[in-house]
Amino acid sequence: MRLSKTFIKTLRDAPKDETARNGALLVRAGYIYKEMAGIYDYLPLGLRVIENIKTIIREEMNRIGCEEVLLSGLQNPEPWEKTGRFSESEVDIWFKTKLASGGDLGLAPTHEEPITNMLKNYVSSYKDLPLYIYQFQTKFRNELRAKSGILRGREFLMKDLYSFHTSEEDLDVFYGKVEEAYRKIFDRLGIGEDTFETFASGGIFSKYSHEFQTLLPVGEDTIYYNKDKSIVLNEEVYNDEVLADLGVTGEKFEKATSAEVGNIFKLKFKYSEPLGLKFVDENNTQKPVYMGCYGIGVSRLMGTIAEKFSDEKGLIWPESVAPFKYYLIGIGEAGTKLAEEIYDKRDDVLFDDRDVRPGEKFGDADLIGIPYRIVISDKTLEEEAIEITNRANGETKLVKIEEIEKSL
Ligand code: ATP
Ligand code: MG
Image (cartoon, rainbow, N blue to C red; front, side):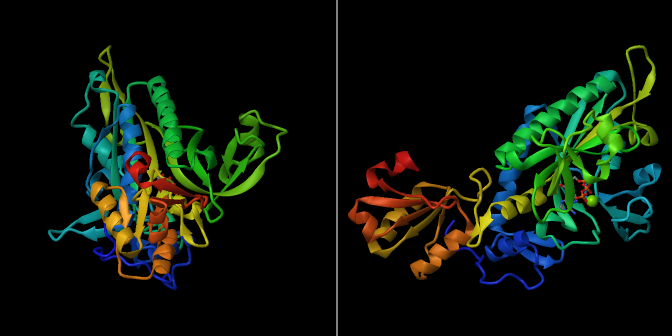
């Protein structure tokens, strides 16, 4: 991508109403555009980050045998009425609208009801199970507080996976596989060390659910962890009863602030029973399907990573999610010519070919936060080299021109 040809521009200042650091940085660096509080557009750079995060999640989901779908955003109230969740007293974050032909319609805040309802048409026997079905989908939630940039959107991107089983044992085994897949995902995204599987409140059918909480000063959650962080609890379940239940009396716990980047639930019959998703087992007995659900906040992850990996100059993307690997600057005629040649050969380069002062290019390189900056100038060419600087640690090295291809 050539900066001279794109419509996006870096900004000196963020919008005044953008108080969250992730939002301010991402708007200033040209990744997102703010429509309204909690409502953002993803621009070319931002979309590349989103797609990189999705690719990592998709690879780990497919590795454990999940199938990808795309369910509708517009929701028929019928299945939701069967679980009682179309009612605003049960789910208070609905955006609702009307059909032109009459009748209510909702904008999906999540997808348990429609997927369970849909599967009634595809599941009847134990031979049809298990199933692991996921999607990347835009969710709509009329969140009261939307002041955290893309950490809490009114429209946001989620990966949601639903699993369907013939037995609790089978659900438990798959739940373990998802835990493992989630650990790999957060490792690959560069936040593994700061992301903890956390006990949270369960619901009707299981004692606890698990959240994946990433340490983050501006996060909205409070967690408690023991010394080696092997036991982490959400504040909502941090009490003597739960500690005794987990067998951890007497340990000292520290408090921290975090962002929930994912969560996993054993739903059992919570949705299959009211919606009538059943199967017949080997003995011809009809039973409700066991279910689990597993979410990841894709856009919240982007905000979390932006917030975590940044300094006073701007963003510092981990390589796995960065929109490009190199930020390329050519200075002077010869430097620009070689920069053009490098750009022509590669698709992992953001080329700052704008007609502006080098100082402005350096500033924007830091703000946009691409992992490596390449500078080619008369000075580097005197050494028959190009200069590569690591955005994260500032380390600079010269790479000889004949070694460019091998080195990059
Ligand atoms: P929270 O407690 O933060 O509101 P939640 O319990 O409502 O989250 P789920 O409904 O389980 O979350 O959604 C799955 C994941 O989607 C969450 O773990 C979180 O990462 C993300 N998520 C939830 N709400 C939002 C939002 N308003 N904006 C961005 N991401 C969100
Ligand atoms: Mg919520």
